[in-house]
Length: 314
Length: 314
Image 1 (tube, rainbow over the protein chains, first blue to last red):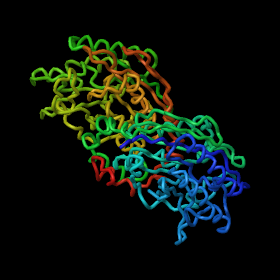
Image 2 (image 1 turned 90 degrees about the horizontal axis):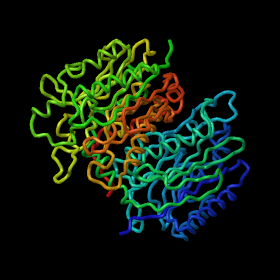
Image 3 (image 1 turned 180 degrees about the horizontal axis):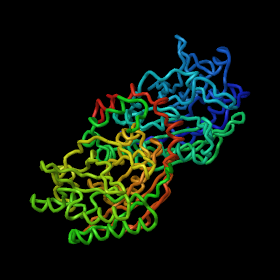
Image 4 (image 1 turned 120 degrees about the horizontal axis):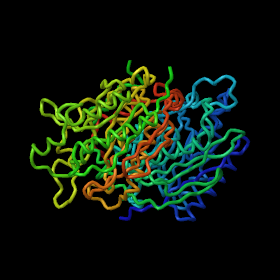
């Protein structure tokens, strides 16, 4: 059984508020076809790829908010992408704003197999931002307002036989900066972490010290080290560029289990990056340096679950 | 109260088996004086700096093993360093092989204040290597044979008033690759992590794919990302070079709370690196991106303590 899979990151340029859902979906289909044309069998799209990053706006009506959400996936605004992927025999990781039949809203992602089967689903746990808008700020970060916290944990799952049955995990955007989520996947033997993001090119909470360059460095650093410390491949894919005056970093990467960047986007626009991922390259790390059964000491980790905030010594 | 402290990493070149304890201690005192001469007020030495890295050898007798251990600190073989530090008014982090009055052995470190007071003590939790020697290997990694697992957890502590009362934490070598330890310190508001290491310049468990360059990259990456994800300064200091035919990486670094390297050793020998550490530079990270109280979701982290080894999905 070959355990080498060619994967692609489909970085997207900006989606303006005025862009039609149809125009955005056509760009995504073009990226999918480009990746498939390069031999990729799994294509990773960003977080919330179907619309602009709407949590930057204070949205007053449920009617308007609903235009950013999917009631089903695939659904009327997304089916063409799923159809084309199945025709090409290509799997996908794709984020979406999920509105459940019960009226719950989540920042979600699914991974779809080459035959269109939903292999796994994830709801973002580490929601950044605030519930209430910050007075006077032109751009907000209102994920805590529009979404409930993910309620599915960090559920790893297997890819299909034709991919070598790799253990896959999903994170969304800010999750990639939190080693706890990575570790819960690591404890399930994850071999490839799939991540989409929209990250502001400045400090969205009002700081002045974080340039786009520094924030791109943070984004890459977190993925590299957590991939290394869990001996897993990772692909982390941006929606990038200037959305209605608000900047998003690019820097999409594919990272190997040593934490080494093997492919990286160079633009802030629509751009495909590709790498051949050998899942067996995870074995050295998992069996030696990061042989968890041999080396972890959980009796000393209790504060990680017993405590939420930091409590400095007196 | 100024919260800027000039700190130094005192990287050490190799200690050969044949080197006398006195000659090694004199080198450490020279490094201390050099750091103090550059204005450093806290000097970080490597793990097990007083001897060669003896866990690479199978040591047959307790009598020989005891020559590598300290029954007290400061003690007859180390007091001159502690005396000189107190005279200079310089604090230190220093590793040592600890033999307790009850006969327990630990891989330990202490941090000493400018007046010689022991501010904190730590016993290494993530012991790498094996209990039994690997047949046929010229060099071993027998930390699990010679040491008990650390039994003090990850106890943060305060530096003195004259340093701005920073929250300090200690790790030893392999600990730096385990995000759990960093997070337990992060949950105590750590502002400066002190780390010493001896890391083989090849895979000590027999792998062939890890060059000295890759292993130095791993060492730096883990410190950078964990510093960033806990919004803390970190200083990580090697014993480096060729000890009786066994290579150790260098790459000692001082890293800021953004994960950016601000000072780095360039040799594999005795070398002082220095940086001015502004503890208040941790505030942006601790109050925004890594505001743990606002953003952590411990209810989903349970496998981190409920599980030791990895359990892949079926």
